[in-house]
Image (cartoon, rainbow, N blue to C red):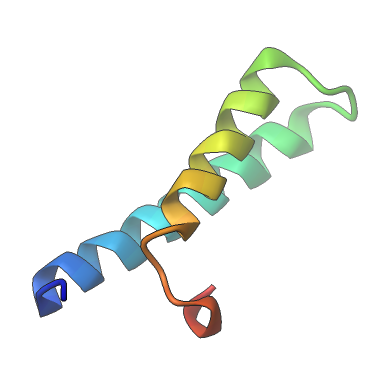
Amino acid sequence: MPSKDERKAAIQQHKDARKHLAEVSSKTTEVTDEYLAANRAVIDAEKSVPWWRR
């Protein structure tokens, strides 16, 4: 079971990844490599965060 600090770090990482994805998404409506990388970062970050915190 992860420690409290690890859980907080995972939640912050998820928030940061979602923020970056929103910034990338606002630039263009096309699917670019930058968008795919940002989306993958969000998906990877979600694995460490409970579903109710997403």
